[in-house]
Amino acid sequence: MTDQRVQKGGAVPAEMGHNSVALEEKRESLYHNKKDRVFVRGIQGEYNVKQELDRLRAIPRVRKAKDLKFIDGPIAYSRHYVEPKDGITQTFHMHLEEYAPGGSSQKHGHVNEAAFYILDGKGYEIHDGVRYDWEAGDIAIVHNNCVHQHFNASKDKPARALVIKTKPMYLFLNMLFQKQVKERPLEVTPEAEGFTVREAEIDYNHPKGGY
Image 1 (cartoon, rainbow, N blue to C red):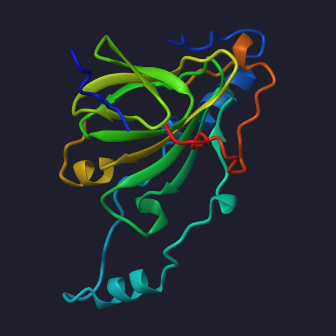
Image 2: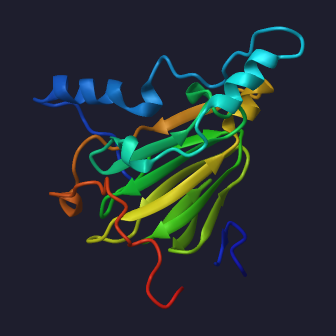
C-alpha cells in the first residue's frame, strides 16, 4: 500500500536533576512554551482599511535568512521566517526545522494541517501511532487533528524541513484546539554530541544529479 502522507518528489522529556534550574530556564525559553505568542494580529482603522493596506505595501517582501536566527535546541531547532506577529501575513506560518542526528521534535497535536518539505536527510513521522518514512525531496503531510512527532533517522547527519501551515487561519476561525504531549527534548543525546545547527545555508538541500 502506498503511503498517502509522504508523497515522493521518541524522545522522552528530560528529567529534572542537579541542573534543574538550567533545564527549567531552557524549558521556559522554548518557542512552544512562550506565553506571549501572537497567533492572530489585530487590524484596526477606517472601514476601507486604507491604513492597513498602506502599511502592508510598505513592508519588504523578502526576508533574509541571515537576519533570522535559529531558536530552541539542543537537538531540534526552528527558524521562523514569517508568522502573524511579523505583520506581513495573517493566515499562514512558515518556518525551517533542523534536527540533530538522532533528534526529534516535540509530540503534539493541532486542528490545522501542515506540510513539511524535506530539504535534506532521512527521517520519519509518527502520526497517531503510525510510522511514515521520508527523505530529501519528499513532502510529509500532517492532517487535521493528528497527534504527531518528527524524527531524524540518521545517527550521524542532520535533517532539515521547510514547514508551511495555516495555523493562524484556523485560530482566527476559533478552531483553538492544540495540545503538547511531550515537549522538545532538552538534553543532548549521544548521537547529537557536538552538533551545531547550520545557521548558514549550506548546500545540503539538493543532491548533485537530482533526486
